[in-house]
Image (cartoon, rainbow, N blue to C red; front, side, top):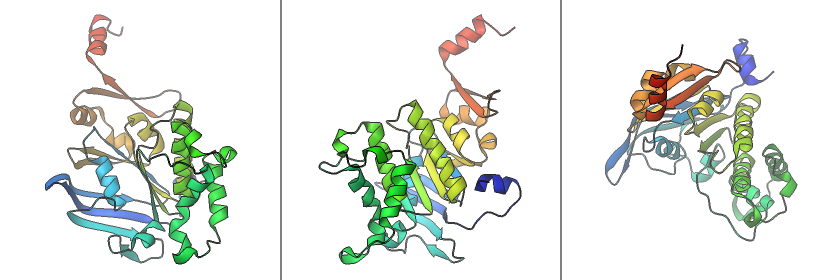
Length: 291
């Protein structure tokens, strides 16, 4: 039984990592772009950050990963030990042992194999002066297998497609073996099959391994399908946060995106589905009303 199924059945879930921000404000060039954000990434849950371009979702995710400085606010990391730490006070190595981030637009390194790149994820565990990493080989092999790239582990990364390279970088994050995983638009460059497989993997990481996942997504249907909780951002503020069916309402989405968005349920899957209605769709509805 997965963690998600156990929780639904009323069983206790294993204690894992939790990363939380409170009163988080982030500025660029003296202008606040994220305002007083509060969010918790909980063990064995997927939290999706959604919203229009420029709403602050990627900036908030990068601040949770400490790549972007906060003007004010707190970042708390509970590594499952019962004692929470100030996330901003940890060293870079200490933080990276608990939190991994897959960013957008990583470069293609030349002269390296897929395995070489995945091994980068072990840097927080190696220690100084090249000390051995006893769990490194097993962690790298596991990450290669989970992402489906083990069959070209010895291939040069410069020979990969964009989608293949995206999965290699994800494998590097998984090799980091952290309790919190942050993903910034991970389905970019992936075709439909690999989008579905990657989101299935994200769900497995939460359900089967108890990882706290925070993911930025543009596709509202993908967010509704994969996430336990959704945070909807607009103009740098979290305007709603909770279960997908509670947050992704037609009134709220239409107001945030500035276009009519219908929300329904897919009869075959029971999942929430959204549809943005443009001028031509609306015209066709007027000309051909449902009988």
